[in-house]
Amino acid sequence: MQHDEMIWQVINHQFCSYKSTITKSKGANKDKKQFCKHPYSTTGLCNRSSCPLANSKYATIREENGRMHLYIKTVERAHSPKNLWEKIYLSRNYAKALAQLDEHLQYFPKAQIHRNKQRLTKIHQYLLRMRKLKLRQINGTKSVKARVHRKVEVREERREKKALVAAKIENSIEKELVERLARGTYGDIYNFPEVPYQKALEEVEKQGEEELEVESEEELEVRFVASLCCFVAFMFDCY
Image (cartoon, rainbow, N blue to C red; front, side, top):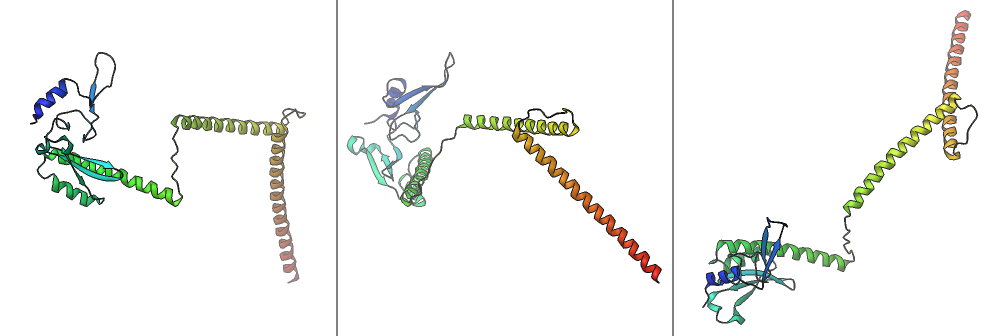
């Protein structure tokens, strides 16, 4: 009824409506990759073991409306294309679904069982993510996915570095001008910008006030020590 090797030879070397060929590089050394667009394919690759048409004994897992289903194809139903695939509902529980796979695919090749378990794991993970996003929308905390613009971030970092360098240069120039004004290098005051000049004057005044405070504290200490010495000498004279 069905000869798998003959079907594969026809599909592989001739036309197949589900085959899709992608060329990775241009030129003489072209690397071609063939993919399968069949909805029941487990891997999406066009090869002998993954082809759902060239294997009379085949199984795959599909997701429909948020539920996972196991589709099994056997050679005994090949005479009826309508009933070719047996549909089995899988549990939402991951452990129970794995147990169902082991039960229904116990006589299948190990490679097919392993691929279906990988497919079950992947589908189960994205179904969980879908449910979490839906719950967030229901609760009012809609998740916002912001696009990451790597080029914009690099450009902004470069601008920040340039701005920091420019700020350091401006501060060093301002300090140098204040020092020259204090030394009287320019004599009369030139037309400097008002805001930086006022800031510089305020800093100079603050420094002067701090120096005066330090000097006044030192003078008070000297006077206190001198008066204390005089008092001690007076007391000795009295005795």
